[in-house]
Image (cartoon, rainbow, N blue to C red; front, side, top):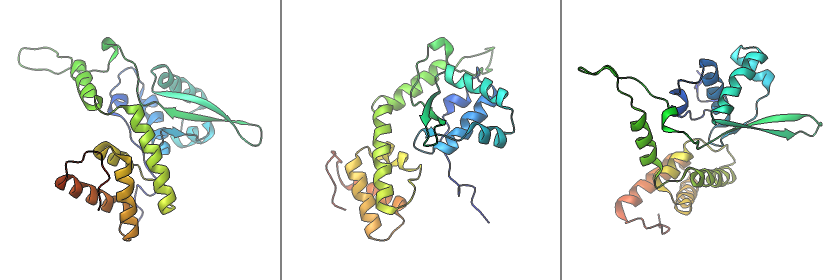
Amino acid sequence: MKSILAEGYGIIPKLVMRDESLSIEAKAIYAYLAAFAGNRFEAYPSVELICHELNISKKRFLTHRKMLVERGYMEIKRQRAANGFSNNVYVLTQSICYGNDSLPHETVGQQGVTEQYVAEQDVAAISNRFTNNNLINNSLKIKELAAFYENLTGEVAPAELAGLVEAYKDVAVITAALSQAHTKGRPVLFYADYLLKNSLLSTSFGGVKIPF
């Protein structure tokens, strides 16, 4: 039996999936690229591979890929390979600019109310979630932590590292916990999380390195 996570996985933002201006094909393309990107926010499968595995034509792929670019969910960079050909690098953007009238929304039927738009609630939720946790800053922390993890373990950094950054913020403290877990021969990610949780319970966690 093989785990469905064995070949990797990625994170799909709810905002993308709820955007009613996107076609189902565009959402499938985004989900496919997110699975390749993992926690690095970049992926570079070839157009041929994408079309083959999603079972769509190249013309159809390009049409719906364009939607993602126009909505600001994705950027495409060209990277020249050693053989002289260029590869596409798909960058999944971590912040976008929306006007209130263009936010995805849903209609809700309630007693005597025909429809209620919840776009403003979405804006409030997003604002609250990231007020004290800048997305760009988090992205840099995740990349730094991923490089440390791979150097420490010799393994590909798992997507769950993003969760450690979200929960504990301080990269120095997180790397100390990862190192301790590795030294003890424990499952690195889960034991590091255990150490960090217990440290938070017993200290004020003022950004100072905690002795585990």
